[in-house]
Image 1 (cartoon, rainbow, N blue to C red):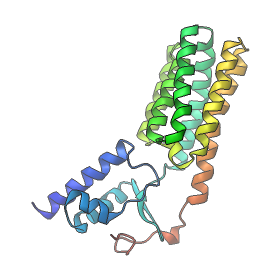
Image 2: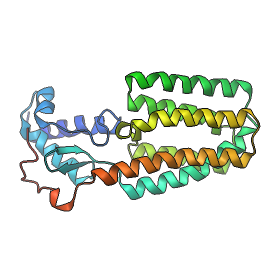
Image 3: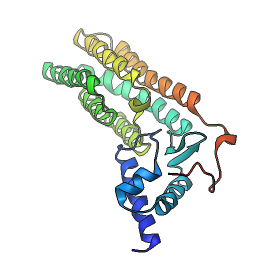
Length: 233
């Protein structure tokens, strides 16, 4: 097998795990471990890492090395701001259409989310989070708003949104906020109150993620060149 084909294989291996969430933002890529898993030398893995760096999927930080890139702040900011607005509106418009069965299903999903905190899997938690919110917004009678909500969630998948992987404390706050949104719906609260609660819920996650990224953002002088020893086993 040629060196080039080994590099391509390493690239596909790492890229697939970034895309499906197994390698979450901030995950450290240890070249020696990946090489052993693929039964290749470190050289093709290093080449694959450099290609991923060029694509913006991997970054370097001094004393840390290669890691899966954190979500770009501006893209994440704009997507989450938009999603907060349209999902809040969709949830408020759906509220009057939700039956006791809808609310029971939402409570059950949220209970599963709460139980999952004991053995936390950010990727699974994010799947349950979408399942929970889908119950609340899918009955939205305005198809244009609902389409925008779907676009927002799909955009988050493109951004490899695993927010809870690096702000795990936000997960507990999130399930508590879910309960409060359900309480508002069950008691027939004003649609505006429901919309604002759903919007604040989304922006609270945004604030937590941006605060984390601000604290962990590497300085330009900390990003080594392609021949740096940061790309090491």
